[in-house]
Image (cartoon, rainbow, N blue to C red; front, side, top):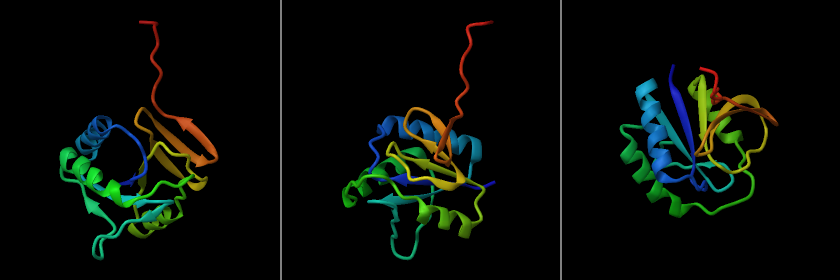
Length: 136
């Protein structure tokens, strides 16, 4: 199962949280690719490439810092382009890293907002992080 991360360059997630999140994904999946979303949801192309392999969390965060300067903030994030790319690549899991409001989708998308992972289906958001119980 190959994971695709869609990194919103306009999100304001702390770099330390982003680093820890990517580190945990690499530990669990080992093979993780990333694509970068700019402005209102366009996919960033470097040369002819839209998808890049994540080798380690530190280089991912540094690249994200460098690329943030080319993107200007818009309102809601449109995810049509990333859904198209997910289908073209045949990926089963898409994790969107963004704390901006996302326009609805007809597919299941996992969204990491810097604090928790939620599932987005249409306009419905389902929180996936387990709640802790005081009953032990």
